[in-house]
Amino acid sequence: MRTKIPVTTPIRIHAAIAFLALFSGMAFAQMPEEEDAPKQVVGISEVVVTDSVQSRRYTGQVVTKSTVNVMSRVSGEIIELGFNEGDFVKKGQMLYKIETIQYEVAVKQAEANIAECKAKLEYAQSSFDRNQRLFAANAASKDNIENAKAELNALKASLAAAEASLVAAQEDLKHTTITAPIDGQVGLALYTAGNYVTPESGSLLTIVQMQPIRVRFSISAGDFLSMYGSLDALKKNGRVSLMLADDSEYTVEGEIEFLNNTANERTGTIQVFVSFPNDDLKLIPGTMVTVTLSKKADAPMPAVPPSAIMHDEDESYVYILAPDNMIERRVVELGELTKKLQLIKSGVKPGERVVSKGTHKVLPGDQVILDTERAQSADEDETM
Image 1 (cartoon, helix red, strand yellow):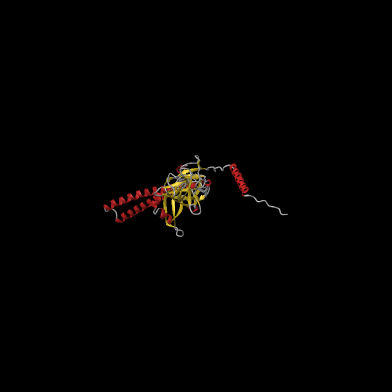
Image 2 (cartoon, helix red, strand yellow; image 1 turned 90 degrees about the vertical axis):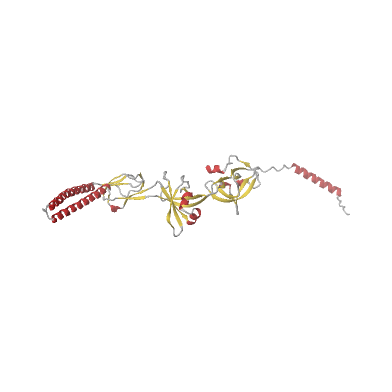
């Protein structure tokens, strides 16, 4: 016996579809609407105009302007020192005293020789004058006059020699006190009291000038010619600042003094010498420093804080803030980087606002909220 399969009528199909549609509509009606994504808070900076500066960095070395090796010009025992090792001494300050007795004796002997020569010279002059009078009266021969004249001239020469000996003896006596020839810092004393020294003993002490002091660095001939072209232009337009070994900035700019008179044959670089005040003695001869040589260009340029600059594989860009606080991506061409600002050759205009804090939190097209505590102009950054 066959079982009959019921046939679903079109009316029933339509009813099922309507029921499903009604159920789906109720379900969607019961789902909560998706909320808008929260706006990000960012800090902004205003694009400012600042002087365009070309900068190059070099490795420099601190060198003293003057180093003096103090030596003895006489022989004798050192009886006194007028300094402690490491002291700062003034020009003319006593450094060493050498025993003086033999030199005082030499001075007195020279003075006695002069007195003797003067006495003999006085007698010889009288003898010569007397012989001249006798010769005029035909009472003396010409030979007597010639002999008297020769004796007179010989004694004049002896007097001059005695006077020269006195000068030399006085100089030797003066050099028994050795004084500082320059202002500077003394180093290790190679000879102390009790030592016998001679001019052949070599250096007794080294004095190094510490104030002012120099920094020496080498600039390529290409940089020198392209940025300056002459020593006068380098002195006029060049600005030199330093970073010390601990990465701290030296607070005073230097004054360019001169270029070395030859370039390095192997590297083609030219040594530049810059004078720096050294009141706090942070610049120690022989130490290495980082030198920044800058040149102020003619035309000012727009600038932003470095934190506003982003990069991808092909270009650099910033996020510009439109009037409705919408983020706009703007490609920029970078210029020189100063201590506080990134100069921009093209891409932004003075007065525009860029995102400088929170760039990682937003994308082009986002609308943002300004953090008034972080909003600041780039020129304020420059003065901080």
